[in-house]
Length: 345
Length: 281
Image 1: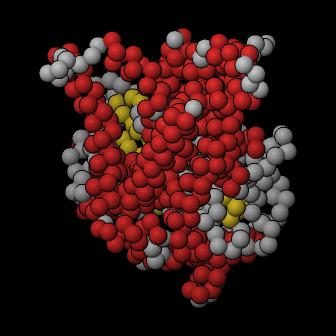
Image 2 (image 1 turned 180 degrees about the vertical axis):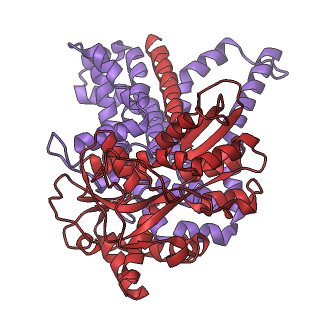
Image 3 (image 1 turned 180 degrees about the horizontal axis):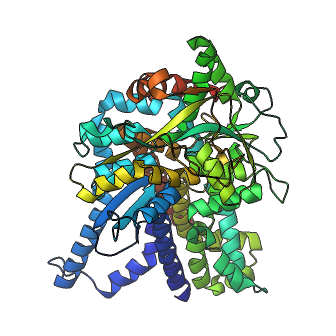
């Protein structure tokens, strides 16, 4: 009897732990600040959590932001967007890719004019970089180095991670930028994915796998590399001559509290962008003073100008168009190349 | 599942027989609560999954599950789960035997440790596996991004099932029957096969069913180690996740439905097998 009771108890406790484990990653919502200045529900993707907290702390020092309480929820961008559609309270959303905001527009939760502002709805930006082992033992500098035999690449899976799509776009776009044809770009991607040794589901998993010793190079974002350095992780990162500008959209919901608009204005102001810059994001407006950024390759010049910077608008028409072309579940160019990459061996 | 419940429900049945007219008031309420609870937690969500799968129509369903990459993932997941379950049947029974029949130093500690795969959040399990059996392995074993990684992760998370179902049955098994068999000249192997094994079979089958079902649905513990390589190490739950990320819920539900049906068939098959074994024993 004791055995059975113990087994039942163990199962029960384990069940609770599993439940706790599942939920904690998704909705680690916590109230920050406090007081009587109102409340803003912030729903975002995981990466800018530290930056958003820093901005909120700055905002609390101003007249508008005094005493405003934040209820924030961070998780995978697509999951967060779907959660808002199914009723997660939100006043302000900050996602990794535009399609996660347009999903809310389609549902009538965000006004269609959300991207009419001077930054076109973008609140934070970064670029695609190569994270390599300390001292860059494989001497990886360029996109061509990545497709050499024996180089092992780790990149999140563009099929399951919206954010990973920036990497695939960068790999494609740099071929076109160098004067190559679409066929050349496809050939490049085929070689690229043939060298991929791990396709974790999310950017975070990919980073964990890379830091756990997998692969020679991780397709990463500049901001994540800088933040990881700030947190004491040891690896180098390389900014290639041609790379993709990552633009993370932010938006106010239709029925948001009026404070949310003031918050968005502050996020887009020089004061808000300075906090983003200090945490590794490239400012989306000009003239932001941020001094030194700890964790960058060169802290005094943390965001060197990229020779050829690819953007969605300039090189890929629109996020919607490129989603269909590259990432359609059946006929997307990248989807097909990834599926084919598995057949070789 | 059914088998573990057998001793309890069997005892209850003899103690409180249903009246000729049907259920008593209390047992009626009990049944009502049980069914509502079960429906809310299991039946309705499962029905919703199947209904979502049906949205794409038969052709959509078929196209989804015959997609080369998806089919490869299903084959890998089901095959590996079956293999892992087979290993667990042997190893789980062995561990249960050692825990019940032997006395040794550290036994109680081992008892507690067995449940760790249950208690650990799976992503933590994934981290542990990555650091132990990944490229930086202190043991010199690197299975990262291979099919062995999937096998290993499944083994890890399904270990407790058979141990925990077999253990209590073994503990309550009357040793006198074994002694009688031995005194009648049966060899130890014959005693085990004819006396012990039939008594354990329902528990083993129940544990095997749980272990298989858990393997089929596993995600967290392997995502870091398996690399999710299409056609090679990508498991079904990752395919489901991809479909969800693409807002293609019917496709995700279709794959989920296939897994449901396979799990159901395996559980049924194990139940049948177990009944036959018991009858023969």
